[in-house]
Image 1 (tube, rainbow, N blue to C red):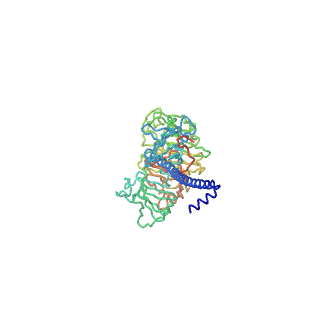
Image 2: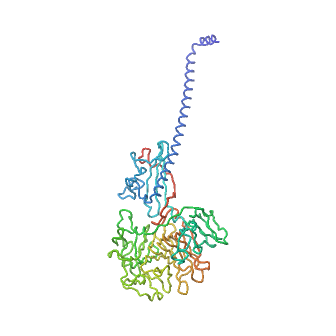
Image 3: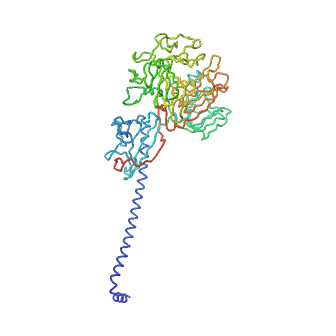
Length: 602
């Protein structure tokens, strides 16, 4: 065979070059195939690693958002921190950004910027390769309670960026919130109800103190009580229902069958502690902090104050005992009328017509009590110069003389406060002791009504809030109201001595309502011969104690409570939050990477 091959090759000597070319060509093809296979394998491995890093970078950005949430939960004031050099925090590059770097003791590597800036590391990542930075935009926090955060994750040269809107979980997450499912000890004057305790804590509670949901009640939104809910047949809950009762569920009085829960029976959720006072809102009227914590002060009024929304973005304010519309210092050391154009001149506030002023959009109004003692004669409100507090004698609206114990404008035995309550033949409801009678002349009470236009506003009172007529929004999209009473929030329902109502039937309140220390309640809910119609609340109701609005005997109002869904994403300006709270994410969205892998902005 070999000899034959040699002969054939030898016989075709002129073809030897072609054979060599074929051998080389076949070898080259084989080499190319091997190289291609190796390249494909390496490229697949590289793409797989890149895909892993791409996904991990997004996870790192998520981790950044969650880490910032945890900081807020541990320190609510952390909202003021960020990097003022960030293009996201301070897009205008102004000299007064809304955020500031934390002090050295709280240095946060996630606030780093640029190629030489720091990155925070995702705990537990392989070789600490997963990193993140975040930038904070808190410009709308005071107005809406919302914080925007842009987080950028970096892994293996891959960059991804998320923007999230965060908002505190608080009272307005619920259409109906209570701390205790019992009557207010002060307002009820029931000697059996003087001890505030949760029904589930084992100590028990007198059954006469409990206020239950009745068969005619339909609650069209989320509900939470720190206490055990007491619910009878026929009640319908359209939203999620949660309770501080550790085992969840609810209690049915004898003879009651199951209520209707569209989204399931009550489940356990931790308690939301009520703040002790609403005086934090008073701070928002300080005119000496415009370069810091209070860049836009709200309006301060003193003593009984009437606010009527008149449309056109305006309101009329009558506050005859007000001397200054802003304060300075903590404790107060001075007063200011620098914002009288915004809040009303003192002369106009004291007049019978009142001051017509713009609605303080995205701001607050705070009504304080008349000081019981003179703290500073230069800054105190007008004070009673004779008589005693217990007589409840008041200045006339003109602010010149003290009224006697009885006047021609009020029933014998009662004196009117400086804005004219009680009205005409109304017999005021006395709560607690005689010294705590309704319409006290020195009280920081606000009497509010009308149609709000012109934006978002929170009105707070150091004592009571009285809703004296319908309170409505001109626009359900742009207008928003918060009503916060340190003590009760009353639905004004005046009666004569013969229990004849002085107002027509049916009422509507568009607002987020909060009673810090007491309750939301209908005045004279248990008086009169007939039902007062329907009480519609479009918003949210939060209170320390349950307040009755009707009786089984047919007096008072039926409930029509509807949740304002905007409260899932925003809040009235500077609305109070629980003492301890967490921040929830309203919106997540991935955007184009904000930075390059070296940390510089794109």
